[in-house]
Length: 633
Image 1 (cartoon, rainbow, N blue to C red):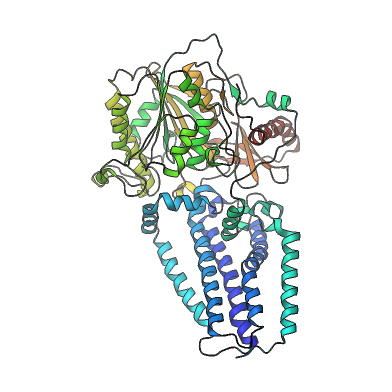
Image 2 (cartoon, rainbow, N blue to C red):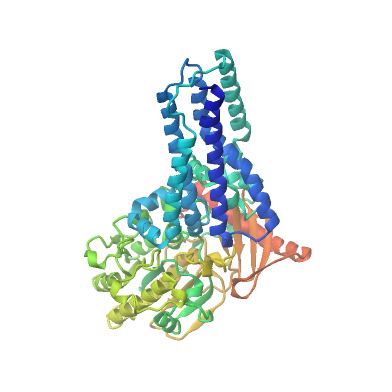
């Protein structure tokens, strides 16, 4: 068997197969996630064209050990079946790694707006059952899996030599020359262009908003292993004093005010979009109890998450720290930094603090995270009977809310309790006995689950309304991030709506309805809790109390690997954090619609007002992480 046929089958054909898998998966990725990207067809075409080179270079990187092995085997008199079997094993592992990671991200991308990374391993560890449910609810993924198995079998059959040994016909000295040239070339490529293999550098090549389309999932996944934790670098736009003036990050009440010992219950509603509770939304799910409760609450129409995931949401809510790196603070490289977390301050003021989650004991590291942020007691659903378990994430919300109501009767006042719901998380399991109780418009499972959560809270409030602690308790409701579960919602996504969540406060002592249009966000919650309880400690909060109408309200979030956004009630600006340059500016219109600002005078005016605040905010965040300055005595 000739050397050329051996190389054609084992090298060139297999190399092209992997490149083809990356390109085909990108096409499917784009089709399934079309709503996540802007609609500039020319830019989409350019991104696809550039991605071909990126996939080629990525595949070259994956094949480097493989090519070296082939060249080494050519030094033998005979390339035996064992040599060929070893090459086939390497290709098989590479094939399944590339295909699984690439095709899983077709479905997974919409959940965090980033290509797949190390966090996916934690998801698999914590949610085996949800993977099974995902497959059941997405039959296309099962079809795709069988199709890939077929492609793999054909690939192995067509690119293997089964019955003949290969007798190399190339001179050994030439093989050594080719091997040296190849190693030198790869070394030069990695030395000169290594940064272009990083997903973080994609903003240097394609337009903002298209980086997720340009890079590929295997490369992003490998890079997350390489980088592990995200390490920040300090910024020096302003002096420390100037940054503190522009963006103060600590909050303290007037020392002359007496603490009021009000209880605080904070409900974090899994995957709740603002549209779910927007009474002006004709397509909202049925939530009669929440609708009624909001009529006796302070409701914030411009409320924003600082993140796109539950873990980052929980961290921002309990620490007051935004999410400008990939990891939540409590699982980052800076988790050991002392901070003035609100729970720690409440503990010092004789509050009993607790966290309730109907999942396992340390779901997504929440137990470690909440303890780190000062929560004294952690309650989980492991002891509940299997009949109350949803088979995926944990205990149905209704029985666990009843458990929370009962336990609250035994918690010493004043208390600060956090309850994290789970039933409105994919795959939206609700008890079988209630399947027919909740109709859903157009039969979307997530809307039915939202209605079930509404029902669960009605029963919860019925259980607690006559307790001795009810009137002394302030109830805060917030979504952890927006829902991303069906096409009807995703088609409405844009840079603004992707973070628009519901926040409202119900105080039995103040039952009159109040609607506030000032922007509020997750990182305002610690300062708001301090304000509502009037405790005298200084706390960390990259925000301010909801009730403070004297200051300019805005939010900062990380939209993608390279884009940081600043949003107020009227304007959204995007900044390239990698290349340090202003990108586009949008006007925020009714129903979260965006209009690009093109008038040069208006752009200049907005830049002069917003850019210094954005830079000071980023400097405060990165520098205080880097220099360990999240704590104030």
